[in-house]
Length: 100
Image 1 (tube, rainbow, N blue to C red):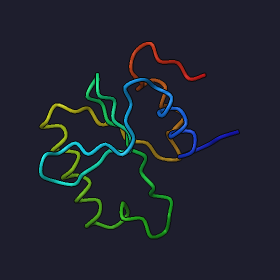
Image 2 (tube, rainbow, N blue to C red):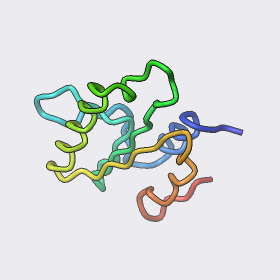
Image 3 (cartoon, rainbow, N blue to C red):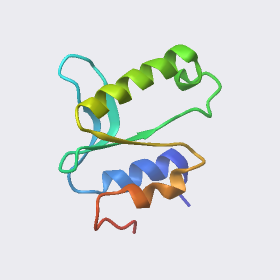
Image 4 (cartoon, helix red, strand yellow):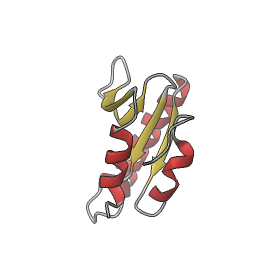
């Protein structure tokens, strides 16, 4: 059985209009793990379980906040997932999308 980030990537890669590692900002190099172009929706998998994840430092977390706030200003919905809530992914997918 596929779990965690592997499942996240497998599911989102199979959706029409979904782009992996999408750069969304005109002047910054910010990217989303996955971006659904038709609905302007981003999907991020937060790797906070790793002991040296940038998401666990105050600097890294602050930079993520800046990125997500800017995306929101641009009209992009951002959904964030971890190992613990990845099982809720289906309810945030574009309408009419079913997992397997």
